[in-house]
Amino acid sequence: MTKMPPSPRSVYDIAIIGAGPTGATLALAAAQTGFSVLLVDGRDPEKMRADGRNFAIVRGSWRLLAGCGATEGLLEHAQPLNGLEASDGGTHWFGAPSALFTAEDLPEDADGTPLGFMIEAPRLQGALDAKLAGEPNIDWRQKAAFTGYEREAGLVAVSLAEGEVNSARLLVGCDGVHSPVRQAAGITVEGRSYGKSVFAANVALSRPHDGIARQLFTPEGPFATLPLAGDRANLAWYMKSGAAEVLAGLSAGEIEAELNGRFADFAGEMRLEGKAVSYPLELKIANAMVGPRVALVGDAARRINPLAGQGLNLGFKDVAALVEVLEDGRHKGLDIGALNVLEAYQDWRRFDANATALGLDAIDRIFSNDHAVLKPLRAAGLVLADKAGFVRRTLARQASAQQDSLPRRMQR
Ligand SMILES: Cc1cc2nc3c(=O)[nH]c(=O)nc-3n(C[C@H](O)[C@H](O)[C@H](O)COP(=O)(O)OP(=O)(O)OC[C@H]3O[C@@H](n4cnc5c(N)ncnc54)[C@H](O)[C@@H]3O)c2cc1C
Image (cartoon, rainbow, N blue to C red; front, side, top):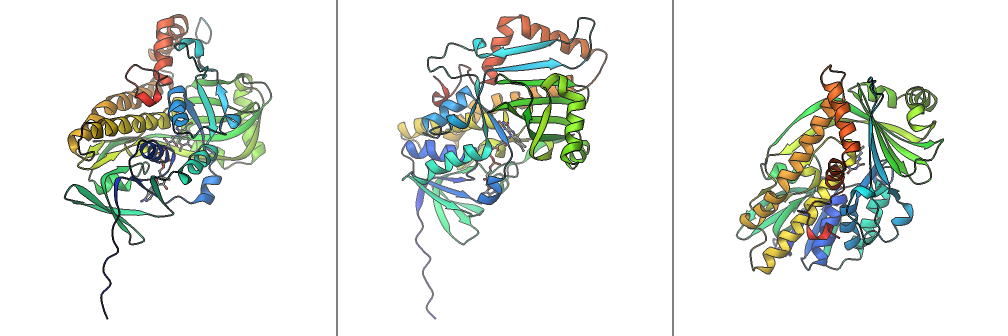
């Protein structure tokens, strides 16, 4: 029998593994900049439709998505975020302090964008997928699995489970918290389990939320209501491991009784919509964001405490920074997979992302207990944030991706 010659390989500028929110956005931004992209994703479209997550997309992230043309048709389903309120659930001699951040704490915005938007995960993914399908510079392999890569002269050879092998100058892992790309590159992770889980559900509220995201800090952990269109909200209640799982497993009537018994004064009466879920909290930070011809983006680089909804927004900052570094590298005639080009991306992103991850970790520790010293300190912190304009403005700029070091695609 004659042996068949191997099928010819395509050579791409960038091979991206994972077409979740960060991978899809990176593929679009890179392709629209003129890079040829191989995009590989193993997700199951059925499961995606049942995804109950809701993302808080802050102002800078929204600009990145809008620049890729992915917000067309999204606005009508998005709930504008008009403010963020943090309240201390403890009791103090001066009452229960709280701090409210609004769009007024941010610099004037000519396009009138609010602090951000709340958007349901399937809607965001649907908008990104529709855009991907029409992008000529992207070859999109759906329901395909990345299995490994090998380095070759000036390239990486990327293998898929289906036997296909292609070459690229750069391999990017946008493949989530367990990142097969990170593992194949031998990049290790540090982290810890919080010993906590999140109870999450969508509810209809008996009173208007006015577009305000609210967090109430209780000794067990924060309880958050994130506004959804039509006076509905996405709840996140952080509890000890095991408790959230038990609560999510109760009947709708039992869950509503528990929620309303504890939080009706804070949020209004809540009526459950759809299924409640629970998931464990973990902190995972990759020890490097780049290696020879490899870069990590989004949850592949870190999984943080979802408190304040910053996880995906950090991933979007990675996307915007990486495209900018690659574009500038190409402009200077550099090899986009070379380590010195990729290190510029890591230097830019690593400190900001790790500081956010560790900052949220600290907030979680400070607010989730009744320690005799920490309790008055955190109350004083909220009073300071509420009364001191510059503290509020600094926090609001950080949370909504408005700092001066922002990538171009996220700036006004
Ligand atoms: C319940 C919940 C609620 C959350 N809420 C918020 C929020 O409100 N705001 C916020 O900012 N963040 C939130 N987060 C965090 C957010 O979900 C993540 O930060 C975000 O999904 C990360 O996006 P990503 O594209 O990096 O990775 P993912 O969304 O995990 O996507 C990874 C992709 O890689 C693909 N993949 C993996 N392995 C392979 C392989 N071998 N071959 C091919 N493809 C592969 C997967 O199919 C998937 O499509 C939440 C997380 C959870 C669990």
